[in-house]
Image (cartoon, rainbow, N blue to C red; front, side, top):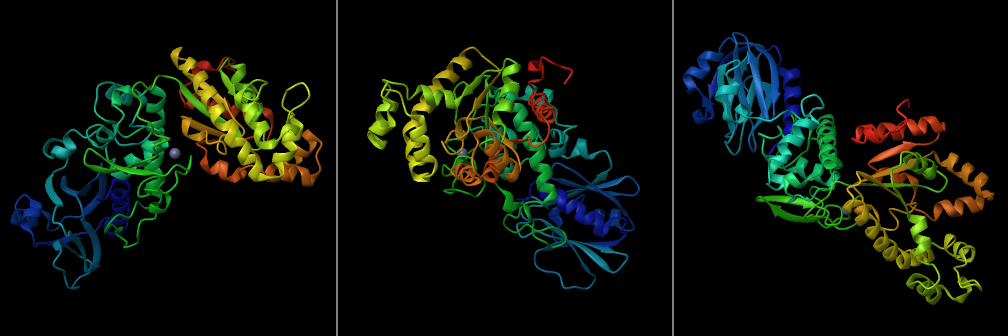
Length: 487
Ligand SMILES: [Zn+2]
């Protein structure tokens, strides 16, 4: 079934093809498809000019002169195309609009579910039940945070069917609901009224951005969909979760699952989108980057605003302190050489060992990873209990250590490769070869950027970097945490 972006693509295509075209006559081969009844329908349209084509949700609104509007819904398989007059019609051609320039606007529909209503312009919102109570269009101007907060608070329904209900938000179909829920880390069965404000804001941003991207990419190709130009939609190549059952999640690598929610095939990541009894109000922002890209600079900005930062490196040190299970396992795996005479970990020896050998690094991560995770979960539980609005999880190897799934959003601090190399060489007094070895031991920075929700460019001045952090805080709804408003 075409979704809003596809219908918008059809609208734009048709506007270019038949905008201002004049109809000479109409043939109706399947009378149930039109209203009023076929003879009247034909009579009313003869001699009319298509002045404009509008869209509301998944409805196309053909505007004619003399205050006439034709409301058209493509339903499952409906399609418009423009052909030279006299081309043979097919058994699926149900309505033909003959134009005065020897072209036809033809409507075909293998399932015959599409409908066309001709009425007085303005009456569509009174007479077409789907348009009567349609929710706002997903644009920044029409879909407001306040509106979403209000409707979300009133529904105990699972979020997926809630979003599919056109009376809440216009034009969201199965694919885009799955995509935006994945982007916002919300389980499709999460009761709508339990979703906290920060997630409502994320969902809103994602819905608006996703629909915009999809329209720019000419919509998704599903089943028989194609645009009025006959070109296939391109957006299918950019789907993050829909249709990816069994494939690794683009964020956390866990295989995507497919289930049924409200009778609809539903794709989600079981690790990123966890069904929660009480999601709480605390948003966890994962902060990561490459070595020497300036992650700690960004971390300091958050700390300066009294926003709690959980430092994964610090937690990592805590879990290998003398007497811990972590230190014992490191000794068993890498040998007694890793332990100093005073019983503490020899970080230098371990660092030298793992940074030149990726498989050793992976081995180390598999020891410390689960211990760090447990400690972090304990710390987060404390913040959630105290209803702290925002917590930063500062972790250089967030993705490598499988920490991505636990985050509500991920910020990556990025600089160009050359800048990273130079900064690392200067900071740690390393040769080019040594610096490259350390950089290459991590996931490529470009891959981290691809997995990020927000990317901070730290290649310019400190002030410019800070301005990006402040902007993010404002846009994510944490503007009240900014204490130096002059920035
Ligand atoms: Zn995932």
